[in-house]
Amino acid sequence: MDIAERAQALALKIRKHKASIETEEATKNAFVMPFISLVLGYDVFNPAEVIPEFTADVGTKKGEKIDYALVHNGQVQVLVEAKKVNDPLRVEHASQLFRYFSVTNARIAILTNGEVYQFYTDLDAPNRMDAKPFLVLDFSDVDTTLLPELAKLSKESFDLDSVISAAGELKYIGQIKRVLATEFREPSETWVRYFTTKVYDGSFTQKVREQFTTLVDKAMRQFLNEQVNDRLKSALGGPDSFVSVSNAVEPAPTAVEAEAPAAGESDLVTTEEELEGFRVVRAIVCGEVASNRVVARDTKTYFGVLLDDNNRKPIARLWFNRTKKYLGVFDENKVETRYALERVEDIYQYADRLRATVARYRDGVAIPSPAGEVLVPAVAE
Image (cartoon, rainbow, N blue to C red; front, top):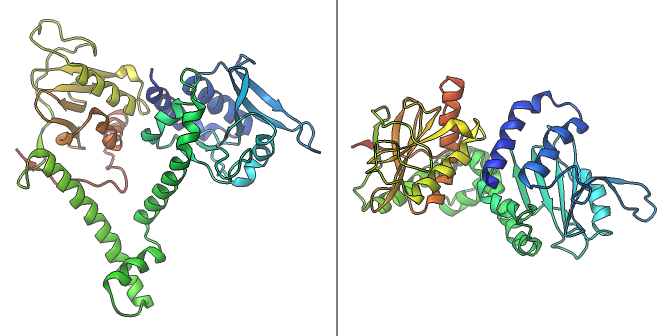
């Protein structure tokens, strides 16, 4: 499995079991050790790779311990401090990490509650851990754009210099994205005031604030919809283009293995791009179901991805047999909407839609689209 699949497998485990975890020790055993072993690839039972209860005397502080120290090339490179799952992480939790950071060779410190992982380094002052993380990975909603950076800390691909060089940009991009997400969920008074003063000449009274809070919220959502529509129209060939929709259930050929055409259909050619797209879809949804339940079917017109090899449970269609590539996703009525892709990696932009589709099949209930998602109007072909 690649790191995306490993991360999604851990996300599924956390989602299943976190309600039953009541102690810090249980959090370490259930989630933190699997993160170190499954996701990062270190042998948690090999003291040459993972040192539990790592001790380094700091000034007058004697015998304090860090939960784990990760060793690479014989040097301690990463410190990990764990707290109980469901407990919010606060800077006070990192006090031991702050002290240990200056007396070890480690350049990376991780504070975690088993579900949220905060990564720190020393961007602001040498050998002094920053007060804010440069990367935050939340396994309740994995941001797949962060996984390539996480891979640089894995045993197989360890590249500390690359992590440190990218940390400054990651730190501020991550913080800006979190601020934007908060403002889009619930515009703050500062945000509303900023836009109001750009378009309204009167005083910013309580009545005006209440009126423009609604207007700013509505304008932001309409703007996002328009941007997505414009991009799709451009990709599809012009202002009169549209996103196509078709019924999902139709006859399909015999199931095939992901790596080869179906038996008896030798004229089918399964391309490497289709296989890559299938792997991306499988990596996205394996946080909801086991990866072996996600099956590929190739046809002459599209490459299908199904749950449980069941034609009534379509997850996605890859329309790659043409000049422009499209991803087909399905709503709760099994109606397909196609989105233009510039690259196979663009499938990650629709991760929430794909996971919601699989969750509906898994739970057997109607699940609305993820909160805050921009839905693009579409018309039938």
